[in-house]
Amino acid sequence: MVGSIVNSKSSFGNSTRILGIDPGLQVCGYACVEADGGREVVIEAGVLKTTRDLPIELRLDEIAGDIETLLTRLTPDMVAVEEVYSHYAHPRTAILMGHARGVILQKCARVHIEVRSFAATRIKKSITGNGRASKEQMQRTIQTVLALPELPSPPDVADAMAAALCCANTMTRVVAQ
Image (tube, rainbow, N blue to C red; front, side, top):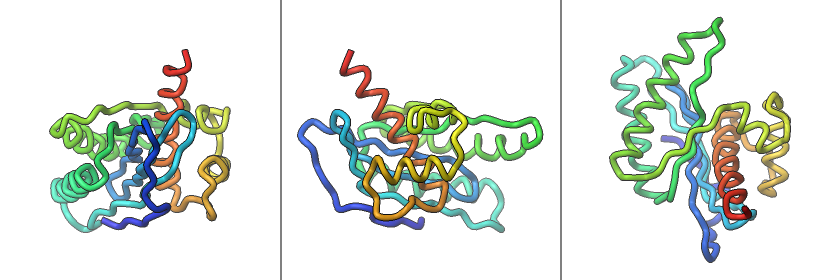
């Protein structure tokens, strides 16, 4: 597991802690965001990397262990995960991502943490207003929304932050209605 603290821990009054995860077999981005009615603070963000030359079952076991550690340490109220989407030109990538996503979902189910899944286009639209936003546009918008001193990097971390923010945005809309 490779992690990096982005902001010091901050606790709002009636906040919800959301763990956003961008699933992948080689690299999983993660970001823990605390949200309170339209204000969001990043508690921690980073990447989980697997050992490239190991068989898939051992790499999935590495992901499972890392996710279990994150869930225990960060104690999220819910987890936001990007749905699997595949271009027909790259079905293998979707299958590998699906394996990683399955392990993540199982670990959340094991500790009874609610999971919300979002399509990539919905995440992008929620953050930028454009469902086809570029990686760079997403990174810049996230930097602005979260008042980060630097662009979130690598893109896997930005994608995890975006999933958490999308989840927070859907919760804010439900409360406002």
